[in-house]
Length: 354
Image (cartoon, rainbow, N blue to C red; front, side, top):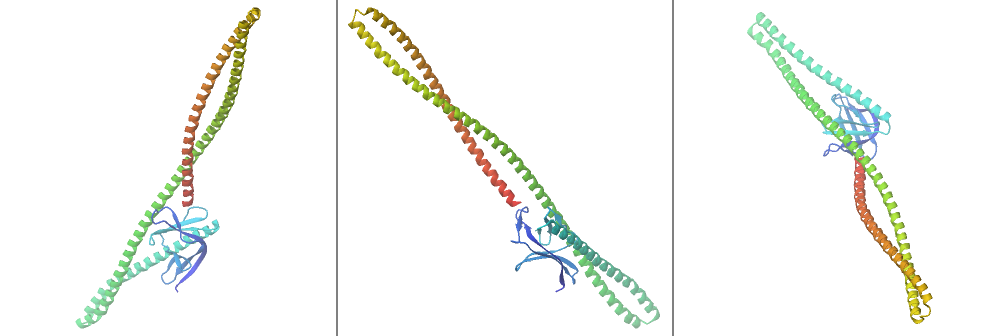
């Protein structure tokens, strides 16, 4: 009942992952109310946030705490008592600025409250010491002026009061020493937490830069592979043109073979005529000359056929060689595409983590 809200806003609440100490874990599914509360009786300040019936933030503000803006709409602070780091995501930069300014104001108020408490403890200690110094003098005066009974009657209440003040002073000093040790432990814990968070942020930034460099390398490799694919497609087009040329050569060979068979048939007929009709010697000589010409043509055709066959064998060899190169390149391309898919999944995962 002694607590009252002094500032209220709405934000998405996150907590650092206790296992990895790197990733943020959402503590609320949607934006919830986050408030500063002031406890009048204890003279303390707290940040409290409730999602339904669940308390997701209950952080007492100490002078050692620091609220850090990590982006235009996100801020965080470490709570050593809760052994965690809280993060708040705001809908605008103005809300984040107001919350940070209020944090500094409350932090300064907590520091002043702590200083006042220490001043009260020191004042009480000094007062007790002065009372202890005054008591012996008053007792000595009474012993000089009065009897032993009067001395005992006056010294008893003073000793009792002095003892009570000393006990209170001891309790206050013990509590003060305990609080100092507690604050030192909290300060050390906060320093370690800040060091871990700084290292995690640096590691995350280095990892992001490394992923960017890998993405740039993969993009360049992808462009190079695409260029190589274009070259192979062009080579495939050349292969198709070679196939068409081979088909034309085959048709030409078939035509030459058919012509050769016709020439052979004609040659046989001429030979028969030369045997049957001796009187046609002149025609036989003509036919012989024609036969010799045909044989020369036949020889030329055979030479052409051999040349064409050689060209066909060379074309087939180039075609097989290109097929082997194309198969090897496709295997390398499949591997690179798989690596690119893995890299994209890693980027998606990194984006989700951030």
